[in-house]
Length: 224
Image 1 (cartoon, one colour):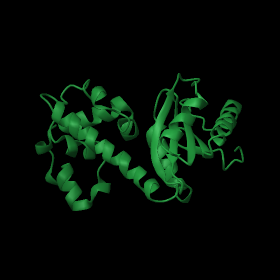
Image 2: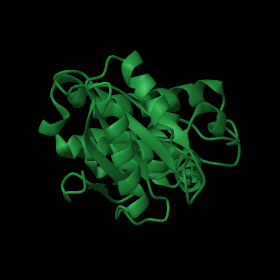
Image 3: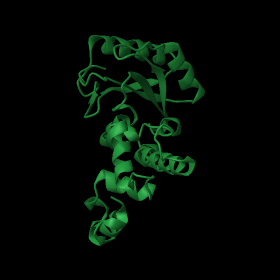
Image 4: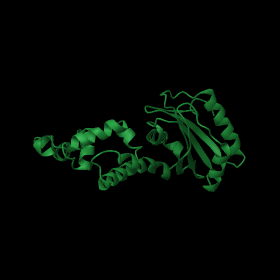
């Protein structure tokens, strides 16, 4: 069914203007961005297909232009618009961490890390590099692995911290298995990185284990 076939008060744009954006479903919001469907496929159906394909909004936020190219009906203009909006969402979550100390915004840290890592199907080790006032310089994915392990090289983390002139870091990695409980291997890795970074006067403030639904702080558990 195309949007013009829907009752006026059920069309996403009219519904948003009358009742606010919160009244719209994920597929309706995405349909507003896409604006039109393809031959034989309405825009709402196309929007739902995108959400189903990439695992909802969280999965879509990790999707790049190349992956979107596989969706029939998404031309260059639509792909560019979707990627731009997704990048704006990511930057909006990181912005508070760039203007004040990350330890003052623990919930913002969790949200940013879940957005970055939570829905990935493979394991990633990331580092939040912080300045002398513990504000975010950048967050970078340093290493990628399989579902079960990632090879992390402390020397590369140290070199990157020196290049960015970071004074502190927050470590993070995801558990695609769904359990956010730090393992003994996670604790050993944290101590190895803490020791290596201490040699260049860079502090490890925390290490988060991230899943799609939560982000566990090792510092809060007394493991750092």
